[in-house]
Amino acid sequence: MFNNLMFNNVRANWEDVAELAKRRTAFWVKALRSELGYSIADFLSCIDGVRAFRSTKLRPKCPTLWKSPPSTTLKFNVDGSAKGKPGPGGIGGVLRDDSGGVIYLFSIPVGIVDSNFAELLAVREALRLFSTSVWASSKNLLIESDSTLVVSWINGHVRVWKFQFVLNEIFSLINHLRNVVISHEFREANCMADWLAKDGVGRLAPSIAWL
Image (cartoon, rainbow, N blue to C red; front, side, top):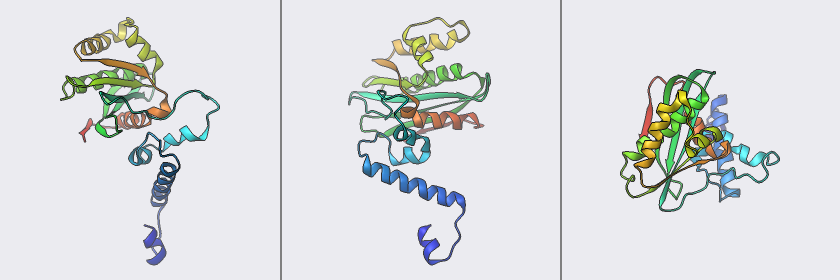
């Protein structure tokens, strides 16, 4: 695009300019912060991730960057989104290995739900997918969600009557897997899953990809 602007007198639209700015910023940030957990692709698909660098006043001691799991573990970051209480909902997730390489992505519409139910459905989807994968018998699984409430329900085996059928399936899936940890993570480090969940809200059909 830059060459067309300089040498061919082509006029750029705002989308082209914004995309170029995002790409330049992504490479600049990665150059300055080589330890950054996001890949260039993550940064481009979810520009909100730059919040991790703008301000630390609200959470001065809280980790905000994606952290690699141990080599024996795969990490599934998940999120749920709902436009209303209840409203159209979507779930999203990204499975990565210890090098940060993306293995699996999902972005799925889930009908009319509230945000807590969407968060539960995202965890269940991650467990369902992992339980049928080739890694189920050889790798541990870490699932990270930015919902403290949902994480506390699962880890505390809390009975929530209107969501109990989903919680029961989650407990069953966990019991049949090698080793599963459900953990809370701040939204800044859950950027990709957040974007996939919001994208799922407007989808007509699920988007699922093994990479």
